[in-house]
Length: 204
Length: 337
Image (cartoon, rainbow over all chains, first blue to last red; front, side, top):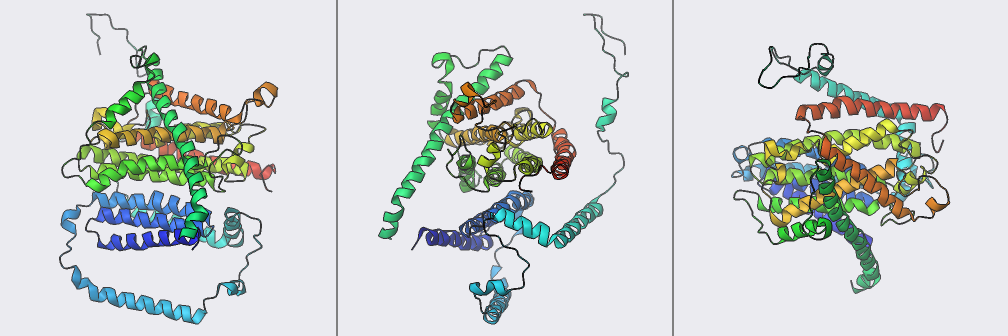
């Protein structure tokens, strides 16, 4: 047993346990925290695979940004009343059904593709030779050179989705006072500096 | 299993030794930083600062630390005890973990990894969890508001920090911290990228919850923010984590813009000085700037803070990324092209 194998079992063990805790803890905030723990350990698995760039991006994007917003929303919920765990057993049949379907699909896929890592070069890929490049460079050249069109398209789709959601939720409310910084800065001439004599006061 | 222990025992022991080599100077650095912070602040306000315990009040911080160690740890009734106690540990552990990739001299670094700058960015983006967990688990209004403010603030300013880092990376062509420093051999980056240096400095203040952006712990509104319910040792862990993060941001400024361990001019008496001395001097200088800002800039209002982050720094740094890459491309200056 090498250290690599040991760390692999450590990371994947923690992933399994924490994913189980995500669905079994009573407190939604704890669920999110366990979810974050499993994200972190998935990043650890990437590091073992020498995909350190992916690992860091996983942490920055999912743990550092997405999960924070998630935690934000869950913390705002009044979870004491919203979650009722008493009749949790009623969800078991449908859960088992989905699980069976999922496992069956996985098995079908694995049998049909003859899972063989040595054969992976046969797949139609436009990938160039990456020997001597760090994996940041490799991902960059694939994403921004070979697949630039798809990258740009997905970017545009995300932009449209973002603008769409902003437009849908934007409400113009009457009578709201807003600070306009440029107007404030241009107020010169309307302000007087007055040297107030003691005991005299000042006329406005 | 015995085989495994025999094979890796020495390696694990050396790693632990290296960790101590980082941790002990860092602890000393935090003590000195706390002292310097209070002294500079006092000097600006024409006070004397800590001057009773030890010569020039030098032992004030260890004395405070000792006091906190012997204080009782109060667990508020109705708090989420586990999360409450884990939060400060996470804060401290993350802030120390980021130092693993910081090079203090050519080749003197614990882990010289290829994605060093991304690693630091990732770890510092995790720092928000300590604060969020502390605020939520305290089960009290002020800590919760403090945590929400702090989380929103840190997430906002991380965006502009990310773009500033990208402008630097465009000039370097590598994510490795050592290579970032070596790329500044001819010219430190704060000269060509001066606006980004300013943006990074101010964002670093906001990221570490330093004044004038210390709204999460604005004592006039929120008692002590997310730390309100903490006492004794957990409070010390928060305090240390915060200051180690501040020192990390100083080191990041040094590495990204002030040429790391490189001497100002590469001539004889200056380049004979060992690199880590220059590094320490520069970090101290940046920390001095941090302390001065704390002393004479009034606190921001929260909407002003958000406006600065999203409406000023984000467009500015986004423009800088485009401008830098265009200039590098058209004048054929880009590394690796």
